[in-house]
Image 1 (cartoon, helix red, strand yellow):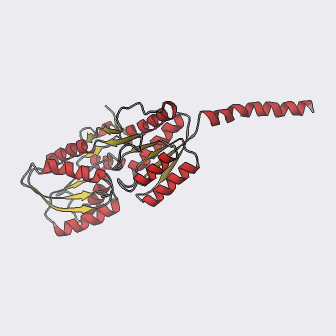
Image 2 (image 1 turned 120 degrees about the horizontal axis):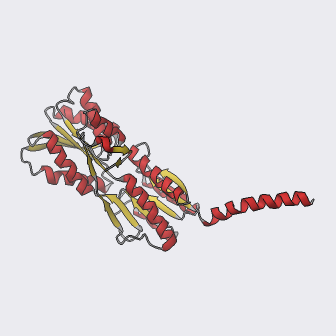
Length: 315
């Protein structure tokens, strides 16, 4: 009896530190991204998860795919699961406000990444790419590639995401400085490669003499490239992207894409989790401002070899 009891005691002693560690040091951080089939959002989720786990938390990654009802359900699950923080890439600048309010009312700090909501004072922080700065970088490089004269078209992202308009306006600010550049078409392709392909086909039919395509993201740009290849026009029409995705980098190396603007998603996804950790432990992010901008970088054929990991450009 004594020996059996001793075995039980030793077993319990061995398990206790694990139980104590789980209850004390850890806690669940819920990460909600848009659509992980897009490498940008996949990286966003993976980096956040890895950072959370490195800090001793458990982490779940969910995806709303741009649907606010799905997003709301994922927030409900995070509340039910007693998440200690939520990292959210919001589905809609206006439509996600209610979901964030729900989490805040449940006492869960929310850190937003990549996209903003149209209300301040709810999220502890909103960490986004400096889209205006990135768009200006991209548009200047686009003119260098395409030239300052001719007809061009634009592929626009999801209108529910403020980033789409910010990038488009940034392009416009630069390109309208060249009076001989004429924008003859603009189509919404919702950040999607398949839609980018279809919209490019129709734009090309209506405007067979274009010399360039400026795109709100890489996925739409890659769709456009596929359509231009099929039409035998890729050597006549130059395409620019935005995101810095691995497929875009491969297209630059292949001479099919002129450039991409790298969004530092790996950088701000890590920063978001570290700020959430600060809120949990100290009550604040440790950063003075709620809205935080992270500057974008230009990737061209000249520096593409410095791309060392998805969405990472080494110095």
